[in-house]
Image (cartoon, rainbow, N blue to C red):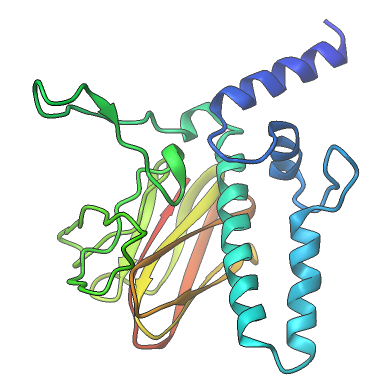
Length: 242
């Protein structure tokens, strides 16, 4: 079999597993090299976002531009995480089926809005009375580890929250896979997670409703550690998975 045929097989297999919104050609390319140009030759979103970030840091940032940058960066982080999860067949969990009430409606599939069917996402279960009406209210999740838990794509390696767990750990087993950070937070402040491979992810929290953000590691990891730094006083939870 020639190299072109192998590439087509690889793309077909990747496309079958991929649950993001990017063109599969670009998603596969960026999963391997986020800075590579797209299939049509245009620049990667990672390059554009880095240029915007540097521009914001050079002077007094306009609040609207900063908010747009954060939203675009969060969307890119999620798309990149979904693309990297699709590189490995076992990293994509099946979409759960939920039975509807009898007679009134047929069975339907529950689709997660923020990170799609690739993440089994459980969002903050805090008491909230001011959630925007345009955003569907997720089912609260309470665990012994704390009042809420972030989503867990793949195999759980570690979990920690504002109420439970160590904010610094080492000697974790990445198994040679990409590691995915999922942070859910609400309140005023930021949550910063740094992996020992150099991945440095900063998550901005807001008061209005819980926000969940996904950040993949920059490389496949074997043994690794993490550290969490919190500014302000948000409620938060972190899962680390591979």
